[in-house]
Image (cartoon, rainbow, N blue to C red; front, side, top):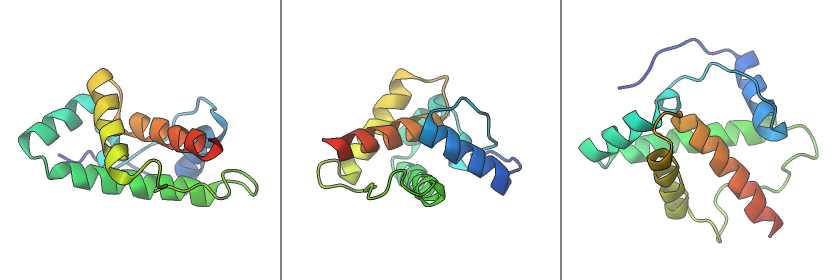
Length: 122
């Protein structure tokens, strides 16, 4: 089930900045990313192929954050680096949601983005 909500460019920008700088701000997230981890796990258990849809949302979200990053922030960040391939990223999100059923899938995506930043530094 896809949650409904209202999204604005301002809320996406606020989330991008909170992701980039670690600020605690609230933004209206829509689509599969607004689903709780508990629902994500349930959805994937019922139909494993739906994980692809969730991950497509995650890739689009992270791409948007990267595109909205201020100059000099996250330049050269790879969203599909050889050391952290897509399969490993999907496993990261599954594991995050299994450990954090009350958080949103988007929270896991933000943690994945941070992990990709760390991977870049290594």
